[in-house]
Length: 359
Ligand code: HEM
Image 1 (cartoon, rainbow, N blue to C red):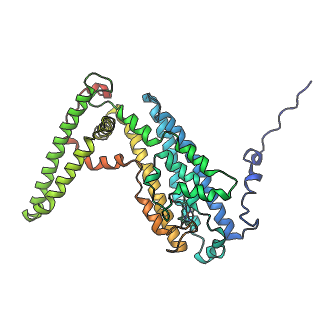
Image 2 (image 1 turned 180 degrees about the vertical axis):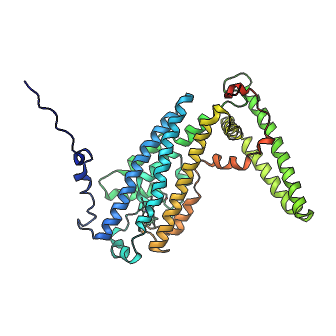
Image 3 (image 1 turned 135 degrees about the vertical axis):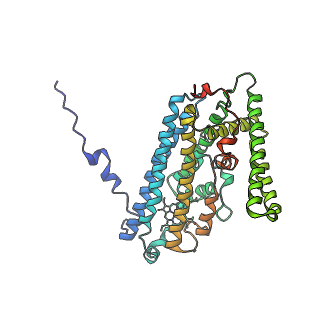
């Protein structure tokens, strides 16, 4: 029996375009041109969020492995690098939204209440996958975003809350990163090597001595430049910075301390060939957090331009609420370490160079 060859794919079928392009009907099936604009811009963002989620999961899966072979670190950097480009693109995309003049938005805004980006369960999933904890979120009128999604969800067929809860059970990028950092060889010593703890503690003690010496030199330089009168003002500040660095690096929890030592080592000796990819990974995650903050800030500025300081359709204080979310830091250690870094000339001498690809 001759078989009929499969029909060749057609562009619009492959992309499910007829279905996709029939999904902009709004609440009454007949959005005006401005509302169509509003719907499409939001949908475009949500499509990008879908891709961000899939890339984050791929990166997290690699990073969360009990052992991440050196040659797989580039995959993590690749997926997170793609997330960064998408987020940058999303930040730019707010300019499209801004072409909606305030009065034209007011013409249809009220019928949306209480629908709001506050219910973007995909953004909440992105935040959860990164490692933002529910208790660290800003509340909206005393209600945390998760509880809000649960309560408004009662009037929808789709169980966004269940989906969010499932994502919250997953390993976060933050936890995977910290576990990986804790396995970084420090001065050639790896977790499980005999005496690893004392090598790590010795490195931290040596480093902290240099932090102290750097603080003293900074103070001496300031006094020379600005006069002795400045000493009383500057000295407590510098002492506080040194003390904060000490507390950060000498964390009580041994796992946290090992991870911070690993991070400090990568950031300090970043030119070593075998640290090239690890440092690129850290840089990529710093950029990711930066892009998330730029996203939040750009959204808030766009909102201020379109609705001013009035309350949001989701019931928040609007721009005031959004500005508070720009304080979120999911990877605080990656930022704190920046205040602890020393000039290269003051770093403790590197031991076991051969283990980092230097002969
Ligand atoms: C004219 C356009 C827009 C206005 C006036 C606006 C306004 C607001 C306001 C006031 C909030 C705070 C919650 C509330 O009370 O409703 C909010 C939250 C949010 N909006 Fe928008 N928005 C607009 C467009 C967009 C677009 C295009 C996106 C892209 C997805 C977006 C995503 C979000 C997200 C994710 C949140 C939650 C932020 C958080 O809680 O961290 N918004 N929006």
